[in-house]
Length: 337
Image (cartoon, rainbow, N blue to C red; front, side, top):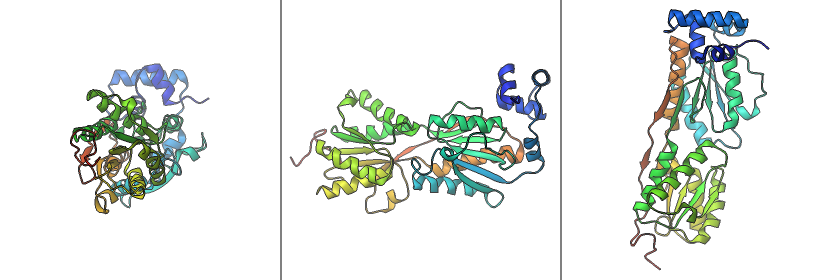
């Protein structure tokens, strides 16, 4: 098996990017460090990836945008916002090719085809794909998740954001709160789950007492979950994204109830419809377009200027307060019962 920069980095006890800079004679790698890396590369019999060298000499001007999965886990609204963010930075200089990681055949990634790759990662299973990108020495940026790879991460603190959303319901007197969570196994679902439970515990309440159902971030799953959760007679529903919140609203109205007079509602993401439909949804703004723009800028700085920046970059979330949360007096009780 061919020796890669991963093997050199492991032997030298340094990062992939340090090895890459040393081998290519760029960056701020000091002389002694570079000599040591080059010596280790020689000892291991490292042969530079000729495809990667060709890429440096003759760029393709193609950026790969890989999603964990497009068909099952990625909302079309998220896909739209991310693509808009990426295109706003790449302009006409780069072509953007959109693919699903779940459809990728391991070992088939062609480093001559992509100048760089943006990974919108939502699950731990993406790690094998990201390792392949690194082994092929293709510049990469990961958005939406904090991952343990030698590449820049651009994301937000989703746990803290959902904690603030639950805080807002509790501060408005709600105690009978139903929760519609997202697809099990995704990092976004895990982090948001942690957030609302942290809020409950901090307020001296037992999170195990709340009725919870999982959806899949799509409208229909929000509708189905809400129909069942209404049996618990909640005064509020906390939804893991706006699309499911709109599905939940449909179930609430179908049951002869209204938002927010009978059931308050909070979503997450702040997609366009949330502020401009007849239901002005209170929600958490996670600006996927800005996340994508920031990640793309970091990647292009590396491609166009040779600037390698492997920081973890956290962008702010904020609670957008609109019209779907009613204040209850006394706490948690309906005033018309």
